[in-house]
Every structure is written in structure tokens, then in C-alpha cells.
Length: 301
Image 1: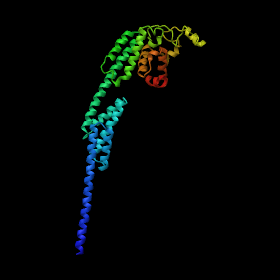
Image 2: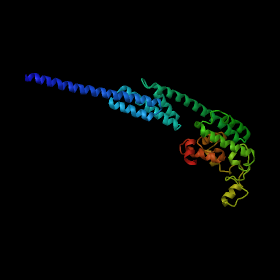
Image 3: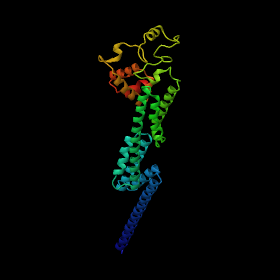
Image 4: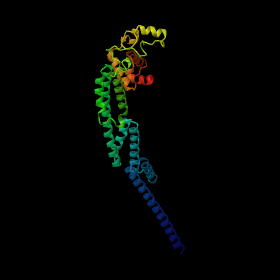
């Protein structure tokens, strides 16, 4: 009799434990499913941080679950891509967006959004190159004293329907600044300031130029007055041959013109620099084993 009692007790305990385990498994499965569904909804609503949290919670219910791990990693890659995109770091953004697209068994909505961003980045980079090419052409025309032609060239930027988008604000500001200088020169208000629109083929008035003689020389030292009196070049003091050379070779006009473009790209107004200023940048970059852009940013910004 006692034997049957123990058998019954054992069965009851086994059924209880099994029932508890089954109930717990079912509850855990439900919590996992709910978390995954929340993640999908949050992705649809572009609430990526909330989606990331939902997928993390799903993994707590099912550690190492392939589906939750895949979509979580995909979501995090998309978030990193968005952050780089907003910081205008388009190369980094492209890499992460491409990772989202390449994710196997991932969220299709994220894939489609990443594809759209990749297409947008391609357009932005193409426009950016186009605008910079136009700007550099206008910059060269300004340097040659062709202010009206420079403005006509800049109009290609201003008339483009995409230029007002925030992605291009830097090049737009530079173009507007160059147009303002062109207009000032055309109106004669800067005819006495030759440094702003220096051309290696033209001679200009020396008034208001800190590198040459002025009608008002009270602020110059005696050595500066002597140097100004000896001035014979265009828009710069007469300098020693060594100051115009690198390793015994004279810095050419084409090297100066090329350096001006690189200085402008680095964010410094090369039109406000004399030829000798540009030579000094070239020599400084050479002596420091740096590119002209790197040297300019380090010493002129």
C-alpha cells in the first residue's frame, strides 16, 4: 500500500515540475516574441534606439538566438551609418549602409532604407565634386582679374536646384564669399587692395596691402619702409632668390597656382595671399614632410 502512495506522490511531483517548466518556457517564448514584434514596430516608426532595446531584450529571453542577433547587429549598423551621415562622414556611412544591405535574413525595411541612403550619398558626392570643380574654375578666373567671368561661372552653382540643400552649405558659402569679392572689385571698392584678387600676370595698386608700401607709412618700421621702397614685383616685396626656391630650384608659377587651389580647399582664402605667401606655404609643407592642405590647416586656420 505504501508503495502505491509513493508512486502517486512521485507522479504528482513530476507532473508539477513538468508543468512549471512548460509554463515557464511558454512565458519566455511569449516575451521573446513580443520583444521581436516591438522591435519591428519601432523600426517601422524609425525609433531605432527603441528597436535596439527591444532586440536586446529578446536576446535576454533567448541568448544567442540567430534571428534576434542578426536584426540587432543590422539595426546597430544602420544607427552608426546614420550618425556618420549626419556628421557628413560619407565614406564611413557608405560602409555601414552597405553592411545593412548585405545582411542575410535581416530586416527588409532596413535594407531598403540603407539602399536609399546609398543612392543619396552617391548623388551628394557627385554634386559636391561638380560644385568644387566650378568653384575652382571661378577662383582661377578671379585670380586672373576676370571678375565678371568668375561671377558667370559661379552662377552655375547658384542656379543649381540642389545647392540650397544642407549637404552643400560649405561650398555655397565659399561661392557666395567669392562672388562678393568679385562684385567689390567690379564696383571699384577694392581696387586698392590687390592681395584679395592677385594675378601673377598683373600689377596692382599697393594701397591697403600690408605686404607693400602705402601712402601712410607711419606704422611701418624703418626696415619695412626700406623693403617697401625696394618693391618691384606684383603684389609682394622683392625677396631674395633663396626665398623663391626649394632645393635650389625656383618655385614655378604653375606650382603656385596649384598650391592656391589646395590652400582654398583647406579652408583658407588663397586670394588674400601674395605669391610669396604661397611660396612660404609650399616651402613649409616641403620642410615638414606634409601635404599643402595639412600644413595650411595646421598653420593658417
